[in-house]
Image (tube, rainbow, N blue to C red):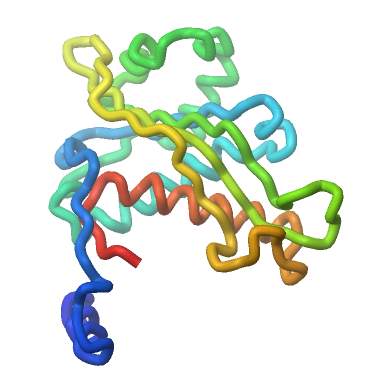
Length: 204
């Protein structure tokens, strides 16, 4: 069954398609472009979750690749640089952390768009004082840097992107998780929130 047919059937069963309203892409300049994903994380976040930068970069790239099979905004998008290569460059040249990302982006050969994410906070519990209640939360921002003739230019920016997991859990958290599952769920939720900025999608 095609995705469109499935959505139509759900609409009929639900008595209408208002709840399946399509949300347009916030930035639609990735089609046909060679793209890379780079993630910076606040020291506390990267210390507590050592694989955070790679987990987020891999998640965003994977979701864009999956969406590219159906989304015109991502048609013919390519990813010539793996997240591991970008992360290794960050480790080899820590001085780029204090440089404007518009100056850093042109250093990556073979791309014309850099999706740059900054993670400011990662939590797996609402309060450290309550040891058995868990709710994952990631806060961050995204920029897209357009690279042309060796010059990087800001093409899109959005701050205060917040994702929580489980989405419907009480604010205080739930006992039905642990730190690992709260973290993994928050990464999945956050990378989804970032990815859907770049293609039209149906609202939940």
